[in-house]
Length: 333
Image 1 (cartoon, rainbow, N blue to C red):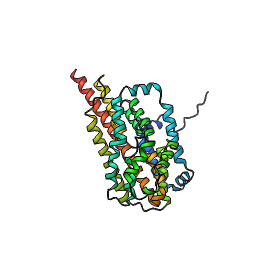
Image 2: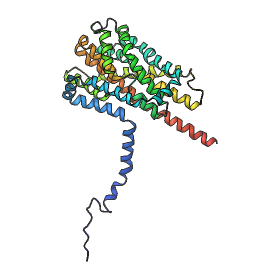
Image 3: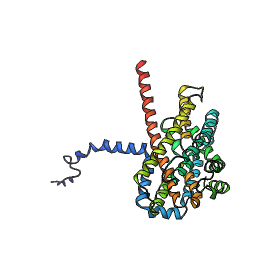
Image 4: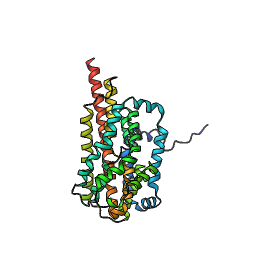
């Protein structure tokens, strides 16, 4: 007679089936994480940096921020191929408007932002610096791909605007900051050389927040709320401006779908600003700003987080609208 050992309770058919309903929930959670990996990573970096400031302070002391920025540009170079460059160059109107918007139109808001009555005033300086930045290094391309936009145009705008920022950012900062606190202490040439050397956002966010925590700077709910509200307001102005102006331009004559894909790529990339270069610039201003430089960094981190979360929601809304339109067309046929 063959004796069979009883199944462990975890594998017993009468006991393990209770976990079956959890499988769809787990898959749903994984899908959510996969769809929102960028904002979740940034939020996680903020929380880790705030609660464990020693690690971020150590990273800042070892000057890891420029290394991460350089690493992102290296990866962008690996991902860029001649075929994508050729595809993007076939859309000169999109590239011309995108570069003008991200380096010119949106940067023109910086002098107004600098005059906002924020407390501490270094927050306003941080937001003004953020407005002068090129587009994000990865978020714009990722969101463009998610909304089925023209990824080649998005990638070309990302690479070209960040390379041009080596020259544009120092000039814009001299114009915008003028005699503001810390402005007299920086050299446009020094910033230009620094950007040329360093041209992941979560790492930089953690370093910035850790500096504030390690320095024991007062960072109350009111300061965070004003930073979040200002960051959202700036991004809404960027989006509204680009949506309105791109609606007047025909980017593709091939089809309405192609035109829409290019337009969405231009809107996303022209409305976002990069965090790593902003933090690098604030590092150059650090001596003039003193301990308040951490507030300027927090302003950039808040604006970057707001734009990432908001644009993720915008992409989801675009996808739902496209699905509804497709369903309506199918029913009509």
